[in-house]
Length: 347
Image 1 (cartoon, one colour):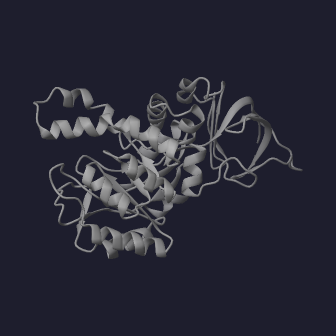
Image 2 (image 1 turned 90 degrees about the vertical axis):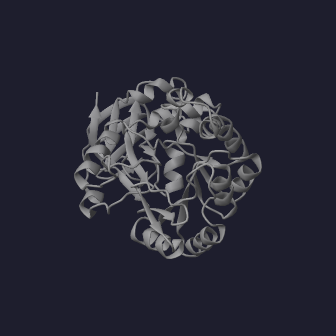
């Protein structure tokens, strides 16, 4: 299949071919047919923080997982990082040509001292063993609940530091849920790779995160949709903590980008297939269009080890009628979606 257009983020005019599940910029000897011309082309979109497959009681099923992943694909999201799921992803789904590419982290591990009581969380006294086991059984990632209630201590620092050090020694990475000032500080100081939510992320912590090539995933989409409801609740410290955390996300994203932190787009919310909402948030925070879109495409893919539209790279792409860097609204209206070399949408 032949595709022509403008390749983003470089802006180069290009002609490429999809040979099975691979991209080539060299005209093949075999006969090809043109499927799209003169589009603006991005590597397939990525949601780096999403939890498909769970019902209201946090019960995971493969059927629900596949159905909610299909919603992602229909929006052009061809890769997902799933930082926490309560059941194993069936192996057949990982290779299903209709499924997005997956980077999973296994169970959401919560030190028993936090006593979160959340049905998604897996309590453990031994974060070290549990985290390494999840990373080995999944895609090199484990997910830690670094904090929970605003007025309670975060995860014990020695336990988290021991896990991070051991994970890094084995080539694994650690993501951490952080929604309190103490939890965010503990996670950054212990060397966590990816800060999820990152409420109360101060400038000194941003500098430390940048120095080691860390990532920040604000997941603002999950919170902004309930802010109005929270503002209507009675005054109190929990309300202040929530609104303060959400209000700080925009500045944190902007400062993190300026400092060199990899800012990524993750939604942590339904409806699935809404990563464009996170791009809109990053744009509103002042990040340049190339950076905001890259957070849900080429930058996210590079961070997860997934090649973009390069010679021999996977055949995942999205095409738009106009340049999304100039008209970001077009991200919600792709003309062409290709996943694993198969056309999902062609309008």
